[in-house]
Each structure stands twice: as structure tokens, then as C-alpha cells.
Image (cartoon, rainbow, N blue to C red; front, side, top):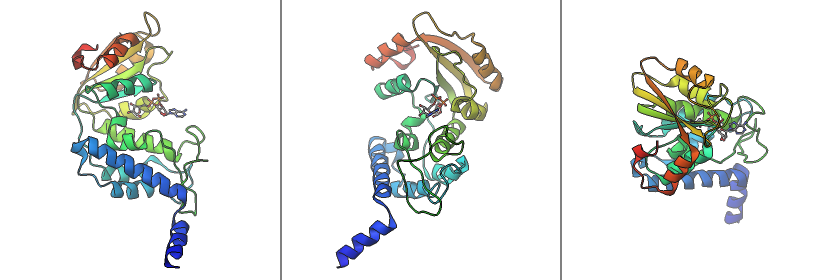
Length: 256
Ligand code: APR
């Protein structure tokens, strides 16, 4: 009787989907710490609790990015000056690159970015449940649970930007510095000249086509950043980056 009561009670307190999201997040958090000893001061249980309080019981379209402040402050993350890599519309090639080489780190290579990458979650008003399906999509409402998380995590990543900073942008699209992207709306606006030396844009191009460093949107980017920061831009063929991905021992400075 005690066992079945216990089971019934635990089902009432948290649904199976809450339990599986919690397990996924704690497992990924612990795996990250295993592989990144510099993160070992983190407590995955504490991180889960801070994460959960951001959205449980709330309308999933009404979670502002500030709801994740506690989570961001709970995570202990050392900045890696000179190795931070920002990106926009280049998700696949950027992460293929950071996975194979040890040159740069993106938000998705930090604890909080790694743990949440690929996940969907939300809560519901007057409910203590956590859902992983039926949540609002990225553009369904501005303040949705998932989008606000990425906005807040991106803000923290940009706040920490130091030394020489790199951004990989897409030279195969009309507007590589897209004014509605997280990179433009959040990250660039938070770059601090007191901590940073330079911003280097790597414009990933298809062979001899697409946009160049003279693109008007990149001029806009240059205008956005503090004039005390050095700015440079280099168009790099995608094939060259692919070569570096397939020869991971290439020196970090030699890829572009
Ligand atoms: N629908 C679903 N997901 C979207 C959408 C959308 N309309 N727009 C953006 N996303 C999510 C996707 O996961 C996508 O891969 O955000 C990711 C990045 O979007 P991009 O438009 O490619 O780039 P950007 O908005 O600039 O965000 C990337 O923010 O995550 C940080 O530090 C990271 O510098 C990086 C930047």
C-alpha cells in the first residue's frame, strides 16, 4: 500500500513529461560537467530548480527574458576571452566547426546553451506541469518560453564577450547582418568596448558568389559597434572552413 500510495502521489505532483524533461536536463548537465572540468562548481539540481521557476505555472506566451535571470545567475561560467564565436544563419557549419576543432566556443558550447540546445518546453497557467509538446513556436508570440530563454542566454553570452571576438555570418543570403536576428537585436548591442579588443566577421561564402564585406548590412553592423573597437571582415569560402573541419589539427589561426 505504501508503495502504490507513493507512486500515486508522485504522479500527482509531477507528470511523466515533467519528469522526463527534468531527467534530460540533469543528465545533459552532468554529462557536460564530466567533459568540462572547469564547470564542476555547478550543481545540476540547483540549475534545474532555477530553470523551472522561470516558466512553470505561467502562460507560455508571457514569459519575458528576465524570467531566466535566476537561471543565468545560478550557472557558473568562466568567459573564454579571444575564443568566443557568435553566429547568425550559420548554425550548422559553425557547430560542425566548434565540435571538431578547439579554437572557438559558441553559446551552445557553454553549459546552459549545451543543455537547452534542441529542447522545447513550456508551462501552463495554474498548473505545476512542464510540457515538451504543444508549446508555442518561435514566432507564435514574442515572449514565448523557449525564445525568451535564448534571448536571455544570448544576452549573458554577449555581456561576457572579451578580447578578440569573432562572428560567423552567412554570405549566401541577402542580409548577412539581419536586423531581426538575436545577433543584431541582442548580442551586438551588449558588446562592451572596455572588455573587447576587436570584432572580426567571418563571412561564409559559396565559391565566388553571394555578398561581400562591402554589403550594406555589414556597414550597419560596423556603425552599431563602439568606434573604439577594431572591426574587420573577411569573406571565407565555405570549402575552406569544411577543410578545417575535416582536418581538425589545422592551427586555429590558419583557417581564415
Ligand atoms: N523559428 C524557429 N527557430 C528560430 C527562428 C524561427 N523563426 N529564428 C531563429 N530560431 C532559432 C533557431 O534555433 C536558429 O537556429 O534561433 C537560432 C538562431 O537563429 P539565426 O536567425 O540563425 O541567428 P540569430 O538569431 O542571430 O541567433 C544566433 O544568438 O544563439 C545566439 O550566440 C548565439 O550568436 C548566436 C546568435
